[in-house]
Image 1 (cartoon, rainbow, N blue to C red):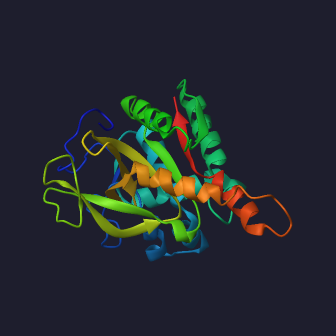
Image 2 (image 1 turned 180 degrees about the vertical axis):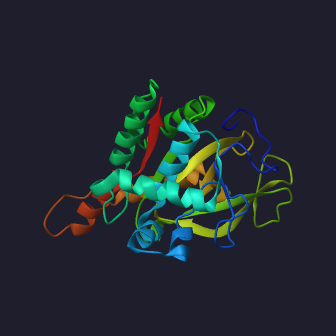
Length: 266
């Protein structure tokens, strides 16, 4: 199920934000959400370079902002470019050298709710690796209420998350869906410190697995929920040592772990 109800994964989703006439060749036309890399191609100034290198959170925020308050808008790239740049100005000093973080996103979304009179609560929710079904239930709850889900993975480069694309004919190297020949093919994309936007869920009762449809880099892709949870759990174990002056890695990993979240919009 996805935004707006049940969907066919073999068909391109038309119910999310898209961008026409964007630079680069990695996304469809229109794209499936925004892509921070476009701003590096344009590269008019330091703000474009900032968005390219540290703007994944800003892109997710902009797409959710558009979906909630404007609708599943289809932008020309010039308009989307201005929209994202204006959102960067909205954050001001909250746009840190490392990107826009979840606390600032929640505050900005709540401010937009107040301005438009929407009675919506927004808050970050830390991933619960001991009971991940609760996280999955929260994601499904939001999608049913037409709320895209901003999700993040905050771990180091050795724990990169795989992204998949749906295929109607999966080879032996892919992951089939149930007992059919359709399923998911591994892409060359992977991320370790990254925000993306969840727009749908496919449940595979045979494999006892959930696949999250995401807008990632302007593309309609999937992550395997159990792989995400396993990465967060394994990385979390690295932060359980004593916080001493000589155990820098434990301190660093513990700080990163606060970024493994979903933004709940109720």
